[in-house]
Length: 89
Image 1 (cartoon, rainbow, N blue to C red):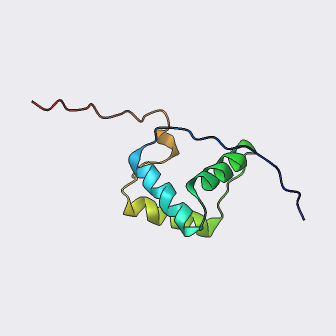
Image 2 (cartoon, rainbow, N blue to C red; image 1 turned 135 degrees about the horizontal axis):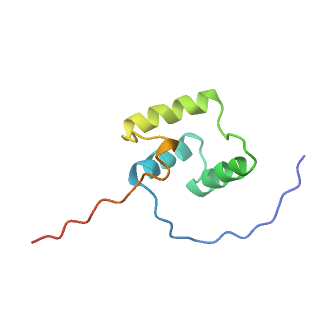
């Protein structure tokens, strides 16, 4: 049995691409965890150079990306730009 690690969580106001957030929220729901718990797991795995998802999970992610129109992948990392806000006249 693994010993529990006491932590302190903080509220943050990060900005994230809308479709990506929809996929993440749906994925958290699929795994019955909070969005924060899902993000922590993804970050901890990636810091070790590991994927937090096995083949079945990757297939679910692909389906969710299609549902929510997330039509880009990791190659878009430095290519994402925000749309210009339109000034109502």
